[in-house]
Image (tube, rainbow, N blue to C red; front, side):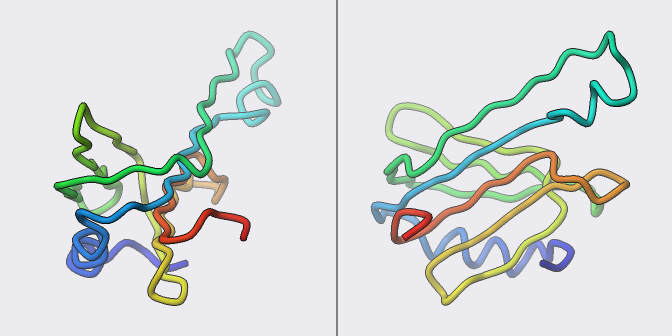
Length: 117
């Protein structure tokens, strides 16, 4: 993965507009929080291979972290805190957010095929 290039990521987000795609969205502070503070609450969200179709896609950010929003027919999907990206075989856009120690905090994957296949 490499640091997000907003123009390239926007291009690939638009590549998936008005197509049935599979989304994987995951957020976590996982065990990271509890390792250093026994009073910390572990939180996370996970959805894998949700088939969606979005009509708009936008990436915005401050040059360090970014947010991607996908407009669905009845709402929005968004991921915030993204820092890195890669493209796999022109059919899978992988976005991730890592903390200052390189630990994964958020992942958003958009693919023409179900993930893991």
